[in-house]
Length: 273
Ligand code: PAF
Image 1 (cartoon, protein in one colour):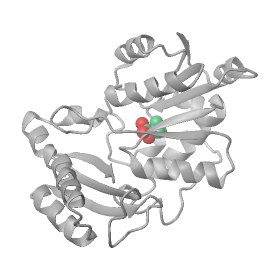
Image 2 (image 1 turned 120 degrees about the horizontal axis):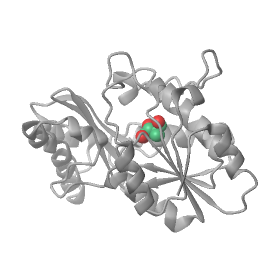
Image 3 (image 1 turned 45 degrees about the vertical axis):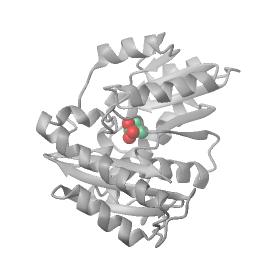
Image 4 (image 1 turned 90 degrees about the horizontal axis):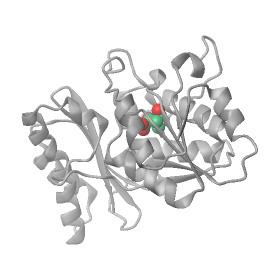
């Protein structure tokens, strides 16, 4: 596995390659969720590139940028074991200048749900993702469905900016008790981890109602909020795949999303029905 730190060196290394390239952008602290993205990339492409970069522009003031879990050595081993061809470890200075062009998330879709609790977050995500995609120029790039709004906005960016890359959504990986894998789960105390299970339980409740053909969004949301109580719920949202609110579940075209705060940790989860 080749490790590259400099964006220009990576660009040069990948330039004029004839192989298909699968790209998995990450912020490190790799877990089974990331490994499933890498596996998918490995299955579908001749060359696999993974990036590890804790992108400062997507953190708001007072968020966990400085304490974000960093496990570079363990991550490198994981990538080797997962047969990654190139691991890209850029620095902040390599990725950003002081005064530069950046990208703005759409004014509505970028500022609802997680964008409402973290205004400006998606500007940073889209800016770094377009930089990374331009450096790697992959055939396909892999993103988890757990960050459904991020995935939706990246797909919009690729469409609106006429970019040549296929975005591949990958299913959420869960612990055996249902908790969605997230690098931020390490912040949870044992008691908080138990509380956090209310999030996946609320989604399980929603999916039970849907399977009984109880499809009214308001009623599903009420039942979910009962399961989530007394957690601080940032939102429960029932949307179609275009990310528009819907009054009734449309099977095959719906995402049910939750964001809740457990202790001091914001956790996201969703199901696609
Ligand atoms: O989902 C993440 O880990 C990050 O938001 C991403 C896509 C790597 C951009 O920094």
